Image (cartoon, rainbow, N blue to C red; front, side, top):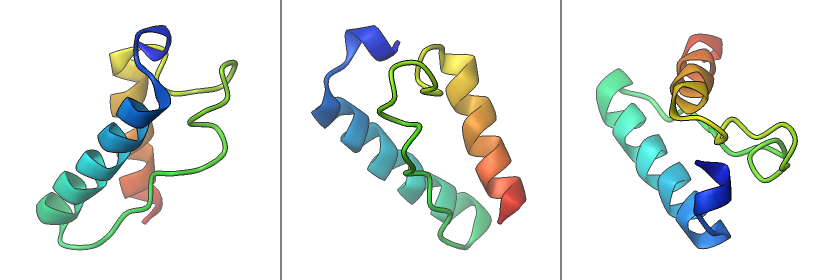
Length: 61
């Protein structure tokens, strides 16, 4: 997934996901960090990695 989207799409995905997570859990959960745009560590390489990343962020609080 990471190779197919540009940085604007990454930002849009981040903001939209944060908004939907906030609606679902009733609190803001920040998702942006340095790993998002790091081509070697990004959770955006596979869709399942992104889901796991978001779930971990919600669990961390």
